[in-house]
Length: 298
Length: 138
Image 1: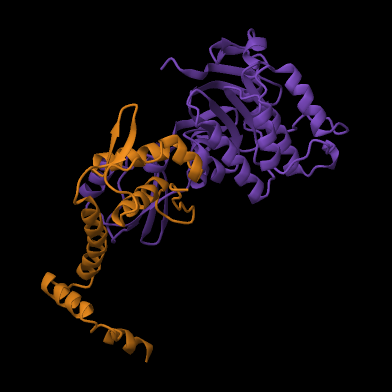
Image 2 (image 1 turned 180 degrees about the vertical axis):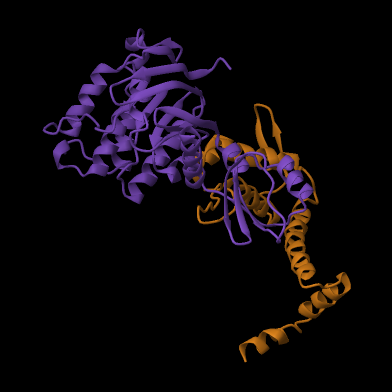
């Protein structure tokens, strides 16, 4: 695919107490990527490297076809970035911010900005310091959305928001990808938001990408299987098994490779599956992190 | 809005199956007639706030089942088959019957016993609780 808006390969960056190791990240136009990881996993560092704000020690970073950070000035014209700290001037009004951004970016869409103001119930004369956290996030988002950039990089956009504000923001993000040339990367530890709107999901933990796939594949391949194991029998090694818990005669196996091959293995063992459970993205994420950490510890 | 499908995160079925089921239902009850143009994948995704890839999967599987047809660059349409609505309603019925047959097998019932039970239920003769359940309560 040549239509990659993000193409990151083998990126590493070392700090005194943290290291980003061999990060690969790809995002096609028209898609939403959910970048999921615990606090301190390296999400913000990765996004800052994408923005050209940090230089990787190793690896290649291309955003919208531009090499970063070298071509950051060109690339940034078409990237909308909302950081966790939002970077708004507390004393200035929202209107002041709007005039500033509109003056810098020729792509500013005043009509769309007006629509967003009313959808988000924001008022230009409001000073930023008078806004609630949710309103500030919506204000920051408005300032990038109305530029209609091709790529949105959003660092934890829904963290700390009430359900109504989250719903409004997710709706605006879905609206963006009605245009299949545009794309969004958003980081989050709220797996429910990610599960709802992401096409692609990448898990990061302790500075490493631990898994990446399209969402449907994740949800299809991960399963919890519950066996009632008769005396004298045992559950064989199953494809993709990441964990197994035994409690009396009941064995619960978590697998990341559910499919015909696994079903055949179960049948060969002569075991009856009592229940096959789908997993939420949150359960998949936690199981993934725990099994990766467990393997590294060995 | 004509594309108001109801997707629930509390529903244990995956979202693509919920979308398929709702579209089948709209066709079964006759809201969406043969030849009706479905919302585009991206428009429906935005309307129900569900990822594009999920809606795409639902459309692909409906296409494979012969429920809708997608014409490249034109959009997706309800398949032009006169018996489609009837078939989908039969499909909904079959899904319930398959579930009932499964429970019947678990209870050790033969197909004839199950059929007799179905006749009894259709005639309104199954109003009373099964006898063993009332024993448990005693």
